[in-house]
Image (cartoon, rainbow, N blue to C red; front, side, top):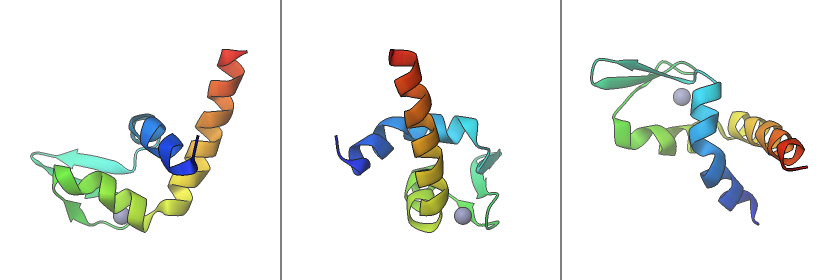
Length: 70
Ligand SMILES: [Zn+2]
């Protein structure tokens, strides 16, 4: 499995685990850079602007998934 495939698979978990995005009414605010986002922009924004954070969380989640499988 490629890294990109892993990212797209675990992305929903990343958002749940790490409070990166705060929902305010109908708007979403990125807590890392205070940018307001539409719902459709959220995933794209995090992937583009906070790639290191995603990578870090993905490797963390991947490790815990592997532990559960065993
Ligand atoms: Zn941001």
